[in-house]
Image 1: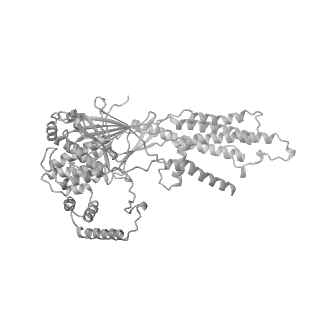
Image 2: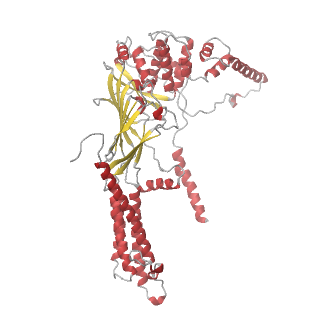
Length: 627
């Protein structure tokens, strides 16, 4: 009872002192962006003289339908110690009509940097904006390289061109300013005006403001907002309370009267001179419409441009974009590389969340330093290009054993927008090499929905023989032979007359420790759990055998007349022996070491046969053959 109480107290103490600080280390008190920032972005967009119709169309299409612009996407993953190094190559071909349009946008600007306005920062605090777009940037192409969920970080992010030259990336305030200018240009195009100075109707400006408010909004958990007056504003005047109740009643009446109105009708009412109660009712109803739906329902001469603007707002409502600035290609074709560090999620159990065996196996891997041999790579980027290549390069000493497309049934039934056929994919059929290659084309874009993992490819890598499993086989076999020899000697009453067997029996423990944990390789994929457990078992059996020998030696040296117990008196019942060992204790050790060494040896032989078969079989992928 006392031991249980002490363990419970220690568990509670460790949870409060060590675990809870880790869980609560993420800062959660983050303020929301002020809505005044949307008005400021509108003002900056109205002063835009750099972004033309062609650049706006390229940018919006690259976000709404990246499949139409990206010809090829190649992803390469290289495992590190706890992370993956990700290198992505994006090959883009712009349609010829867009190339002609954005080349006409390359006229020198008529204003300089000093003419660009300033305003509050992205957080809504007064102060200068990020450096405005420079005049020479009208000769560059701004391309949205990554569309990521708000709040997602990209570690060690570097962008370069095909020659390895560093390419600049817009900061987040610059991206917001650029997106606002693109949205304004699309709306002007929708209403048949290519002049950024042209005026839009109040209804369209209100819809634009709501769209920008949603785009700049941070992805934070919503908290209930109280509309009650603060405690410090306590009022005792009954007439004011009656006025408040009357105002609420009028708002409810307006909500009932306006029920069923469309979004454009409500926008038209909002920009008209109406009472405060009517404005509150209209605003409340408008808040129920997503901003992109309001844009879709507007009427415009160029409906295609309006729908493109609505799709741009929909994509950027819950996501943010990383924009790269590169020299404007004359033929519309260019290649961009970017690199980043990915932290894979550690999956402790492969048997299910509530499996006791899986739970124990996952914890044992952490304790023994056995890294997982399976690697699952997300296909979230696969639907952004017409053709997609995924390559995984494992460290030296590992070979590819299996590859599997996980959660692919429903995904492969979805036809990509404007794709000629359903998706098609294939793996490099040959196994046994140190890398994997997956190819697909016409994959649909994966919806970026939280708590819904995208389809993924799961690769299994195994050590190339001999590896750690061979070392475990040698150590366990040596331990078994030593225990068997000493056990036979002690069972038949042969006293070696020296303490050398005790040191000899302890040698496999030293060897197992040295072979298994002498120098960590610092890589994500390490030896399997079986090899580590075999080395631990060898160590325990070796130490137990050495201790048992010393116990036998001590009791045999005691005078028989003293009545002290003798370990030699414990024999197996019925005259049974284990490989000639008749003593009970030595028989148990011999049996355990025999089973363990036989299992490890069998597993090692199977792995060798598997590697030989995978490496020597004929394949249909082509390539050279070793003579």
